[in-house]
Image (tube, rainbow, N blue to C red; front, side, top):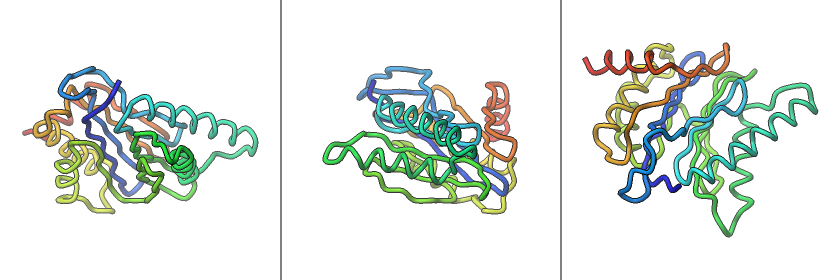
Length: 206
């Protein structure tokens, strides 16, 4: 299945990271799925979002998930979030001159604190405070930039993530059919329920 349009975002806050993605998968102008999962758990402390080819993104996440598990078993300590992002970048670069058509946001919390990385299809790796990818990213990133602060708390970060996603859903035809939201902090990975997300959307749209 080819994901031609999507919106995924990631935002660092004072004690963690919040990430979100829409649930619409498109192939050209055809809506191929209204329940696509583009936010995937890698470990108990790290998550990735996918934009691009869903098969390529899932292949990359499955590989890095296995590598992280093996690393933990071998060394008896968890692979850092930076290490996870570097492995994904290496896997993407390894396919040159061909490409895996996937762009990933990797977020998580480890002993060094909260991290948010962008990994593009060329294997370029950068660490950022906030990110947006996909066809709806210009709309989403403008909302985030207008209100972002590195000192914001969990609730403020949730509001800005939900605001950016609802703006993308309303302005980008290839983005839609709901939102997945995950919070990663020192308590681990917590995917918000449908009810929690609906309440936040209603609060933002008041």
